[in-house]
Amino acid sequence: MKAALTAFHGYSGLISLMEHAVVYSVKEIFPTLQGEGFHTGRAAVFCRFAGCNLWNGREGDRAHALCRFCDTDFIGTDGPGGGRFHKAADLAQSILQAWQAGTGDQGHASCSPLVRPYVVFTGGEPLLQLDQPLIQALKQLDFEVGVESNGTLKAPLGIDWLCISPKGRAPLVQASGDELKFIYPQTDASPELFTTLPFKHFWLQPLDIPAPSAEAGQPPLRSAENVQAAVRYCQTHPQWRLSLQTHKLIGIP
Ligand SMILES: C[S@@+](CC[C@H](N)C(=O)[O-])C[C@H]1O[C@@H](n2cnc3c(N)ncnc32)[C@H](O)[C@@H]1O
Ligand SMILES: Nc1nc2[nH]cc(C(=O)O)c2c(=O)[nH]1
Ligand code: SF4
Ligand SMILES: [Mg+2]
Image (cartoon, rainbow, N blue to C red; front, side, top):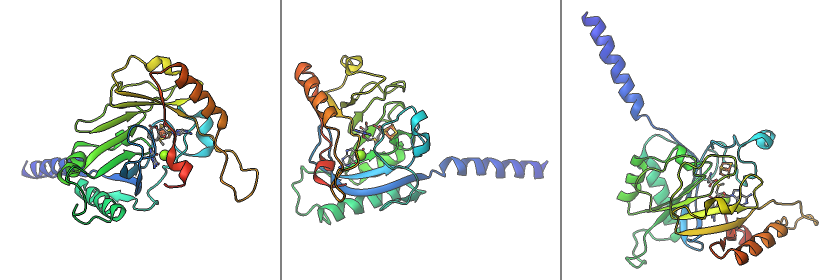
C-alpha cells in the first residue's frame, strides 16, 4: 500500500511538474520599427514564435494550407535571438535585452517617462504560445504588449494592442480587438464581412507577392496591381485605410 501511495505521489508530482514545464519556441527576436497598421513607425521588439495552425511553413504544403500567402519563415528556432525558452522570465529578459540593444537605452535614462518599451508578438501564430505568465513577466518590465494574430484562437487577457488579420478559409474566433488588418485581395473572403465587428481601426494591406526581379541584384518587385486595387477600395470604402508594409519598402527587418 505504502509503495503504491509513494508511486502515486511520484506520478502526481511528475504531472504537476509537466504542467509547469512550458517551452516557448521562438524563431527570432529583433528590434525594429513596427512596419504596419496603427503603430507604423514605432520602435518595437518583434518576438516571432515558431509554428502556425494555418500552414506548416513548408513550401511543398503551401498550396493545400488554410493560409496560402504567408510571407514569413516561422519554422524552427534558428533565427537571431531565437531558441527554446523554459521560463517566461527568461524570454522576457531576452526581449528586454533586444529593446535595450535597439534603443541604446540601458535604463530609460534618455527617454521621456511617457515612452514605454513595446514588444510585438507575432509568428507563426503567437496565440498558440503567448500566455499569462509571459504577459505578466513583460508587464513587470514595464512593456506594452502588442500581438499580430490570425484570429483563430481566443486572446489571453492583458494584451495592450491586438491586431487581427483574418484569413479567408479559417473561422474567426477572436472577432474583436484594436485593429483589423485585411490582406487584400483574398480569394476566400472580402472586407465587407468584417465591417461591423468591434475594432477601432480597419486596414487594408495589399497582398504582397514578391516577383522575381527583372534585373539580377535588384530588389524584387512588389505586386503593384494589389497596391492599386487596395487604393481603389479605400477610396470607395472610407471605413478602410491603407496599410503598407513599410519595413519592406525601406529594407529593415
Ligand atoms: C506573418 S503574419 C504572423 C501573425 C499571424 N499569424 C497573422 O497571420 O496575423 C504577420 C502579418 O503579416 C501579414 N501577411 C502575411 N503574408 C502577407 C503577404 N503576402 N502580404 C501582405 N501581408 C501579409 C499577415 O496577415 C499578418 O498581418
Ligand atoms: N518591421 C516589421 N513590422 C511588422 N509588422 C508585422 C510584422 C509581422 O511579421 O508580424 C512585421 C515585421 O516582420 N517587421
Ligand atoms: S496565419 Fe499568419 S503566420 Fe500563419 S501562414 Fe498565415 S500569415 Fe503566415
Ligand atoms: Mg512580417
